[in-house]
Length: 105
Image: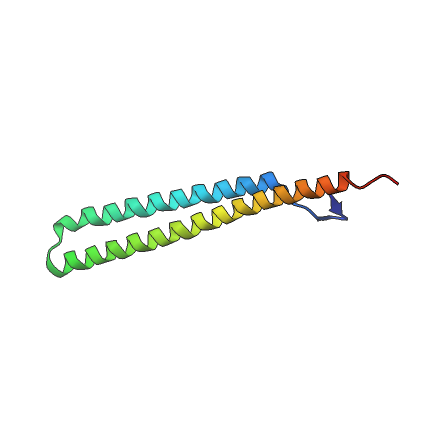
C-alpha cells in the first residue's frame, strides 16, 4: 500500500471484506444472545401469575423486538461494508486497467 510520509493513502479491499464478515458474524452473535435471553425470560414466567406474568411477558416481547432491530441494523451495516469492498475492488481494477492503457511516451 502506498504512503505519503507516514500517512496511509489506501485501503486493502481484502481487509474491508474481512471486516464485513466479522460484522455479520457479530450480528449473528447478538441475535443468539437476544434469543437465549428472551427464552430465559419466557421460562421464568411459569412461576408468575396475574400482573407479574403479564409484565414479564410484555418485557420479553419488547426485548425480542429490540434484539431483532439491533440484529438487523448490525447485519445491514455489515452488508454495506461488504458492498463497499466490492465497489473498491471494482474501482481499483478499473483504475489499474486505465493506467495500463495509457500509451508509453
